[in-house]
Length: 467
Image 1: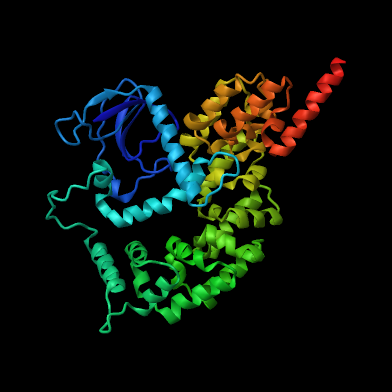
Image 2: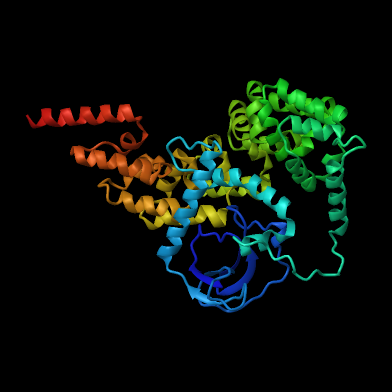
């Protein structure tokens, strides 16, 4: 079927879609929370242009009343149903991530936090199912179609596929004694199962040919010496298997020394590597280019070190294609760019068109000035990482019932970072029942004990004033 959904800046179809923009339909496939990213198994080389009166999303899916499996048809879906489905999906994702140990400390997970946690899992699904992943999703909960016609035309990727098959076969095969290769046994002793090793090998075939004593073991022992728990080693290798192919003396240690000279806290290497192991595989020139940009934005060497330590992923962003254009955009809002980089560097990984501009427009439409929006983003960098539909709009609607002036959100934009159902509504209900009024930041930011104290103090003062 084809679902017709009113276009919203934060709506992203779960798998394949047609995006209509400016009255012209252009075939495009989206996957994950990253805007405009097209995974290899869903690439589209042809574009179909059709006139259309408004912006729409077309999603292909199977429905019970469709006579043709996977056929396209037009069906309007109520916005309320879409919103409900999105809320349910978000709740499921949040529950799943909490079970995996990702704590949100009383606030809602941001889009980037969900993306960063799910992308490795989605990549593993791609590695597991390969090119039939779309078929797996489309036919869920049933099995994928196994009898699809196979093209006899050789693919340009056939050589790559052959290389992957040989690599996977190498890590799977056993010797005359029926034992796996020593490096595979060693990795399994670290906590990696054979299927995980196969997944890594499919993604990075060279991994199958790394020697145990010359490559893998020295790197693992080095990581353990840095204080990285043994249980985290499989996760790090899974994220960046190339680490096991790097020379300790010629590459890894010199790179770490270089980063330490730039301000990375040597005492926190374990956390830095766990968060973003790819940091150690970038060239010094790549790192220097990003650092020079941070200096250019007015950051001190101490704060540059803090950014590299807390958010090493910033090195992965292109300076000219991502960091500089985003900085210019925030400067146009009057935001303090250096402060924003220090407090929330991941904001600079967002798309200006798909993420930043829609949020700015949302606040301008609510009557805020550009200066006020700039102040809000300077005070709370994560503001732009939240979804309009799932976060900003429902929380704004509830804010209008709280009897606060709009200026309260300029003073305390962190309001949008708290859970509506678990924090905002329950706290406000208590305040409303007490008959007193607290500042918005007192209602939400205080611990339960301090909140009760502040409320009690306010109530006593009210009684005294009345007497």
